[in-house]
Image (cartoon, rainbow, N blue to C red; front, side, top):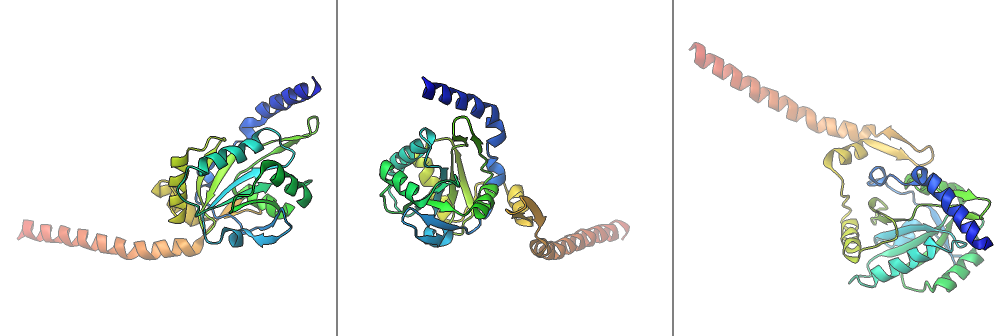
Length: 250
C-alpha cells in the first residue's frame, strides 16, 4: 500500500510541474551541444565527441533509481533500433542524478542488459551536466517524499558535429522516423524553417548563462554578401528608370 501511495503522490506532483519541465524542442533544434567529459560504467573517461566516433548520437537522460520511464526508454529504443537496417550511430544514456556512482551505473547496465555495441550509460560532472541540460532545455526536479525525480522523457538526435538535429518527446520511437532522423543527422541537416535557421546562425547560445549573444562575425559575413547584391539591385532599377525617362522625353 505504501509504495502505491508514494507512486500516486509522485504522479500528482509530476503533473503539477509537467508544464514547467516540458522542453521547447523548437528552440533546441540547431544548437551545438558542449563537448562534455563522460565517465562510463567501467570508469573510462572520454569526451562526447570521442565517444561519437564521427557518428550520429541518440542521447537520452536517465537515473539508476528510476523504476518507471527510464527502463521503458531503454526497452522501447532497443526495440525500435532493432528494426533499423543500420548500426552507424551511438546511443548515450546520460545519468542526471549526481548521487549515482560508477558502481550503480554498472548495476543498471547489468539489470537492463545494455550490452549492445555502441551503447553507453554515462555520468557527467555536475557543472558540465548543467551546461548540457541547459543547452538541451532538459529540466528535472527532485521529490523528497518519494525519493524520485520528475523529468521529461526525451530522445535527442545529435549530428557528428554535436548539433541537435532531432528531438523526440515521449517513449514511443517509430523506426522509420528514427531512421530518417539519423539520416538527417549524418548529413548535418536540421529540419527547421529558413528564417529560424538564419537566426540560429546569427546568435550564439551560451550554455553557462543560458542566454544568446550576437555572432558578429556571421552578421558581418551576411552583410558583406548582401551589400553588393543590394547595390547591384538599385543600380539596375535606377538604370531602367532613367532609360524609361529618356524614352518618354525623347
